[in-house]
Structures are given as structure tokens and as C-alpha cells.
Length: 593
Ligand code: AMP
Image 1 (tube, rainbow, N blue to C red):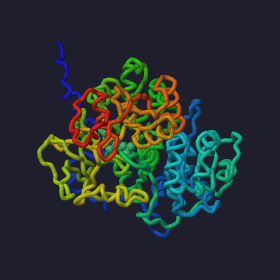
Image 2 (tube, helix red, strand yellow):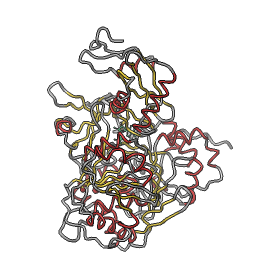
Image 3 (cartoon, helix red, strand yellow):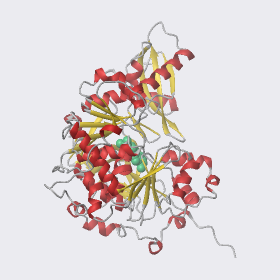
């Protein structure tokens, strides 16, 4: 007899009794009712001597006290297929060596350490070791060009950079005059390299003592500085404190459903906040094994990693999922992915078809979740024990109160009660991983809050069952392949070229990357708007900004639309590019193009 084809709802419905192991968060409503952050803090140990809370102690050293010393903490897979395992005892020793190395250089608590590396074990060691030494850490995206590095390193007054000889030569050497506070550059790798204050990892770190006593750490002291982009001005340095680790332990358990025996793989680059919070901290603080893959995306290679490493929990992103979808599920045939228990996605809107494709290809739907640099950890999620609603970001984490709000003329907000009504997504402040400031920008930080709510800048709606649906960003910031790109940073780089009089940058919808960066440029008199100059400008932007940030397309215009106060109307550029209604033009300068 023919069986009726199950409906989508039936296919994504979860039978709680058949889920193995049982999800950590079984009863969502009950947990929301009883949750208190003070209780969550008890999942952690605190520092043995002197008190306080240090992220690196919680993520690494404390596991030795719980008998996990010989458990694999990091399984690294190199580009050439080589593997290196570090267990929790080894990671404790390596990170201690790095903390001692910093001390031997005279680097003090609170000083800024930038890590500009690809996905290699030294990256984890440097980030965690610097946290042990109570330094403030910024992992930087290694695909950034010199300009984004200079702005961020300058704003942070960076003292130490950990990088490779090759990245140093290509990206950092030319910036030394602009970074007077940069005293030490620690080089991973043996390639020849000349410069002031250069140290070799192999000499400095490998020779240091593997024992380091973490000094008492104020949970409210700055631990991580994550740069993120806004519509205008320079990138913002979101300040995160050691206490954020409380959110990492909880979200790892509740939103990613990490269990003791899990093999977890987060595909994000540590240069972006997901790669730090979930590529480094959350799996380690939960004591699981974390797979780190050095190579860039390649569907076939990724499936092999999932299969060979028996990955049980996988955290990836919509652009990668869409790239896999394009190749089709056939590529998966022959791969045994039976170990995979939970698949999650973050960073950009996840199309409902991608959720369903997860079910077809992997036998698991992708669980979308939402957060941002400023929130420090996952805030809204499709949880393991709840049915996924394809297209929705899920429900707020227990302990997080979310709402859809409208800003009022008086500077406050009102909560929108009607379901499925667009408004701004807001979160009741505070929570442990909430940013504590934008570095040196008190006013910009203050403007993110109203009536006790943190205003995310994202537009969303909430349905009757409390699921949140992403509508769009409330600003002009571009999300391309999961990376947040500030149009101002791109426009500034274009304006440095002698031919460019005006530049306006938008995100152009793209079926795979979500958006790509497109620039509109008006030239100074005497320059020829031809193919040769277009190519030159594309190359100029790429050299300055790096491939991940630079525009993919440039169009010439005789002038760009501006408001009467002189701001380029990116919204209008975008509407015209996409053939959409031009909206309110009352502020358009009369003679603007
Ligand atoms: P970032 O600070 O770089 O992590 O970027 C955060 C932004 O990415 C958010 O403010 C959203 O605009 C977007 N974002 C993150 N997760 C999602 C999601 N699940 N769905 C839609 N947009 C998302």
C-alpha cells in the first residue's frame, strides 16, 4: 500500500522521546520560567586563587580539575590533510606558555593583543593565552587588507600582533608608522622576515614555562574587543568582558545542544565573532571536542570532515549551505553522516528551502539562530527539542527577553504587541555577554539603548507562538557571505583614489552570498569612465580592503544622489539599482542625480 507523502510539518516534527541523547533544553516554557543567570554562573568554577572569573580558565584549565585532561579539546585538520590533536592538558600548557611569553615581553594586563592568523592551532593558543594574561584580545580576519587592519589596530592602540611572516609582509609591515604603540609582532612560521620588534613563536612561546597562574580577574574586565561595522563612521569596537563566558556555556548547552561526548564543528572564521564565541569559547567551556578546519569551503572536503571526524553538532552559515545546495545532494551519496545529530546556522537569513534541504541531504533540518557582535552570544534560536519553523530565527534563549519595538518621538520605545507586525528587534538589557561599550564611543553606545532595551538595529516580527522572523536590517550595512561590511569603510577606500570624486556603496542581493558589495562612483573632471579605470578601481579597493570587503562591481555615474545635508542616499541608489519604488525623496537635494 502506498504511504501518503508526509507534509513538511510532519517531516520537521520532532518526537521528543526518540531524540538521543535527550536535548539539554527539553521543556522550553519551564526553563524560561525558572531561568536565572546567577544559577547559570554555577555551571562554571571561578578562579581557584584570588577569585573572579577568567574566560580561559573556564574554557581550558578547569577541565583538568574535572578529570578531562586527556580528552581532545581541539582536533585541527590542516590544508594538506595533516592533523594535530590537542587535549585539554596540552591546551592548558600551551596557553600557559603563551601567557608567560607575553609577560616576558613586558606586556601587561589590559593591553591589546591582535591575532591575525588563519584557522591554525596557534590562533586558539594565542587567544586563550592572552586571556589568561588578562590582555584584551581581538582576532582579526586574515583576509582583511591593510586598511581595515590599520583602522582597527589604531583604534585599539594595539601592543602585540600574532601573525605569520607572509601576512606581516603583505599587510602589516607598511602600517608600522601608523601604529606607534605596536611593540611586538610574534611570527608563527619560519619564513624569513625582517622588521622591528619581531619575535619568533618557535623561540619565544615554545621555550616558555607551561605553568601560569592566572591572576585574579574581575568578571567585568574587558576580555575581547570585536570590531563591527555601522552605516557611518569607523568600525565600532564592541567591548566584551570575561563574564560573557556565562552566556557561552549556556548557549552551547541550550542553543547548540552540546553534550559531553560531542564532536563539534563551527565553520566560521575566528576573525568574526561567531568564530570566537563558538569556534573557540563555547565548545571548550562545555568540555567537548572541537574540530578546526584550516581550508576554505569545499563541499566535498566538508562532507569528508563530517564523515571522518564523526561530527555530531555542526554550526555553519547560510552562504555555505546555499553553495552546497547548488551542487546538489548527489555529492553526498556514499558519505556516512549518521553521526550528525544537530545542525545549526547563523549570520544571515536562512531561506526556508535551505532548512528543508538539510532534512533531505543530512536527515537533519538546519536550526537557524540569531545574534550579533554586540550580543556576544546566541540570543534567538530554533532549539533541539522544538519543531523548526523554516524561515524563522526561532525563540529567545531562556534568560533573554526579546520584543518587537518602535522608537517613540520622546526617545523611548513602545513594544509592538500585534503578532507579525514589523518593528525593531530589541532585547531587555543586560545579560552576561552583552557588550559593555563601544571603545572610545560612549555616545554611540548610549544610543543603542532606550527604556532598558538594547535596540539591535534589525527589523523583525514575532508570530503568535513567540517565534521571531527576520525582516531586514534597519541600516545600510551589508551582509555578504556572512560578513558584515560597512559601506563607509568601502567608500573611504575608493575616495582615496585620485580619480574618485564621490562614492556610494550598497549591498546588491545575491542568490548565494546574500548580498555582494556594489559601488557607484562619480569621477573628478578629466578622468575617463572606461573599462580600464573600472578595473583599476576594483584592484585599488581589493588591495586596500582585502577580497572579503572590496566591491565586486563598480558603476560610474555623473553624480550621486545626496540629501540636502550632503549625505549620499544609498537607499535611493539601491532602489534604482533594483528597480524598486524610490520612496520618500523629500530630503533629496534638488539638483542631485
Ligand atoms: P555580526 O555582528 O557580524 O555577527 O552580524 C550580525 C547581523 O547579522 C545581525 O544584526 C543580522 O542583521 C544578521 N544576522 C545574524 N543572524 C541572522 C539570522 N539568523 N537571520 C538573519 N540575519 C541574521
